[in-house]
Structure formats: C-alpha cells, structure tokens
Length: 495
Image: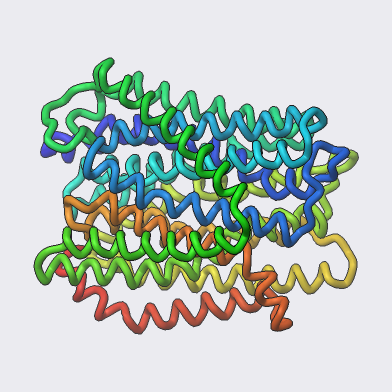
C-alpha cells in the first residue's frame, strides 16, 4: 500500500476502469434505445406502445436494475467473492442483450405475445446480471485504498470516467445501429461490448492482486479452471431461474402477482435490515450507517430528476427538439451522449479539485457536496421548465436547451455519484461493504422508478413535472445543508 501511495494509483484501477467502461457501453447503448424501441411503430420493428406504457416499462426495468445489487453484494460477501460475482454478472448481462436483439430480429416472425415474452425475458436476465456485476466491481476499487486516503475520491473519479466513456460509446455505436440500421443490431452491439468487458478483466486479472477473492482465500492469484466451471454454472443457473420465474409469473392472475410483489418487497426490506443489523457493531459503525441511510434518502431526490434522461428527456429530444443540421437529422439517442461526454471533460478537473482543496484544508465534507449537487439539479430543472414551456407553444426548440440541462445535471452528478461510491467504501462496516453498496444502489432504484412514474402520477393532480422536480431538489438541498453539521459529526472521523 505504501508503494502504491508513492507511485500513484495501482494498475488494478485501470483494469477495473476498462471493465466497467465496456459494461456501461452495453447498458447505456441499450438504455438509449429502450423507450424509442418501445414507442416505435410495429411496422418499423418496434412495439407501438404509447408514452405512458413505455415509461412504465422503463421505470420498472431501471428501478430493478439498481435493486438486485443487494442480492449480488450479499452473494459476493458470503459465498463467491467479488471477482467471481462480477464475471457471472457480465456473462449473464451479455445473454440478456442478445435476447433483446432476438426480439428485434424476429419482429416479423414471432407472434406478438411470444415476442413480448422474449423481450421481457431479456430485460429480466439483464436485471439479475447487473445485480451481480454492479456493486462488486465498485467495491473492488475501494479495497485498494485506506478509508482516509486522499487518493480514494480521486480514484473513484477516474473510475467514473470509465463509466462515462462507455456511456458515450454505447449510444453512439449501439444507438446509431439501432435507430438507423435495425433495433436488433443495436442490442447485439451492446451484448458484444459486455463480452469484451469480461475478456478484458480475465486478461488483466493478475493486476487485482489479492482483492475480490472468495471469503477465506488469501494471496495474489487468478481464478482457476474449477472457479470458471462454477462461474459458468451460476450464470446458466441464473438465466434458467429467470426463465422459470417469468414463465410462472406470466401464468398467474394479476391479483396474485400484486400480492407476491408486495410480500417480496417487504421480505427484501426485512431481510436487508436483518443482515445490516447483525453485521453492524458498536456505536461508531451504527452512527456511520445512519449517515449512509440519510444520504441515500436524499440521493433518491436527485436521481428521480436525473433519470429523466432516458425517459422524458429522450422523448423530448424525439418529439420537441429541432434535430436538423442541414439535411441530416441528429438521432434522438445521441443526446444521451452529452452527459457522459461532459463527465469525461469535467471529472478530471473535479478529481484534481478535491486533492487541491484537501491540501488547503478546504475540501467540503460529503453531505455538503451532496447539497451542492441538489442545488445544481434544481437549476437544471428550472432551465428545463423554460424549454418545456417554449415547446408547449407548438414550436420545436433548439437542441441547446437539452445541452444546457444535461451539462448542469452533470455538474450535480459529480457532486454525488463518485463521492457516494467512495463514501460507502469508507463508512460501511468492512464485512458488509458489498451489501451496503447494494443498499446504496437501491436508492438509485427508487430514484429511477420515481423518474419514470412521476409524470403519470403528477398528471392526476395537474402538476407539471419539471417545476415539481425543481422545487423538490431545491428543498432537499436546503434540508441537507441544515443537517450537514450533524452528519459530519456522525461520520466519526471519516471525511
């Protein structure tokens, strides 16, 4: 560790950077197409769904994508270790993308109900695969740094650049193929990207040293052929189990599925609470856990706004934005690239900024950074409100409105997301890091779900979406700023 401190970041950071980049290429390439694919006319290979139906599917999918990491984190902590769990998740997600591709390639060959089942099966496989991948790769990054190592926030900013490089390439490549060639080729490209991520991590696994191995296993090593047999077995088992669950679910009446859903969510919350209760010991650990829970609550408010990107912003780009440049029409999915491109430009500046401020003893504590992020979110939705009001007059607005909104939201994101990942690895009890990372992802799940459902909920009360989000973020930022002195004290010496 001392050697790493003198020389900078360990090689493993860049192994994990590229692995995460390919996974995000896969995810964001698929996400950029999702609502566009669902709302496309049947004759054009889509499903012909209306706005509300497509946003509901988007919300359920993106919500569950962030909820299953609780399961993946628990499996890694208790049984398989983080490395195996990441490999399993990557392989399963690749299969999910190929299933979505099949639903598009066979659009005119399958019965509509069979095709919809195949599409939902692909989404289900993606959800479970993401749960195994997402929390564990982030916590492997944290394993290479001590809790108060000033490089830790910097490392997560670099790691976050990998996330956003993939998020740029995904919509450009998969989005263009999907919108301009065939929806299926877009999803196929996303699946290939996920396979490349798995192969890269396997080729560079020696740089991970002794991190991410199964419980009780020590010493620097790479996984054996026997370990890979177990990885393949788990991957196949998860895909088969998803198919079985979806088949049974499809056969049950709606009244029964609603009861199962409520009981399932309740059981999950109780189970998670029990694991955290049993694994958290002493006043300091409990104090830090309370900070995590409070910040998770405010995290929901930010992401309920931010995740309009793949839903209402995507549809705003398609329907209300002037996308013509000469004789060329900008694909609506291209607007998804503004955020990750801004991250690539701004994240290095933030990474340097935190280190500089730390040396000057002016680095804001985590709760204050979160509050600043919420204030920036409020500003973004003030701008989006003006754009929406202009579009309501019947004209197509300049694309610069969306560009401005995405850039302001990106500034807010950099105050929350990489800092939040770093915070979990600092504050969570050592033996619960992956589970608590899963809990943190659950706050994203809630934010994603509200992002998709808010428009239809607010419509019933005749409340406009974008001003509502502006006031929610502004109020949340003020509350968090007021609470920040108490939260700083509760972190018990962790910055």
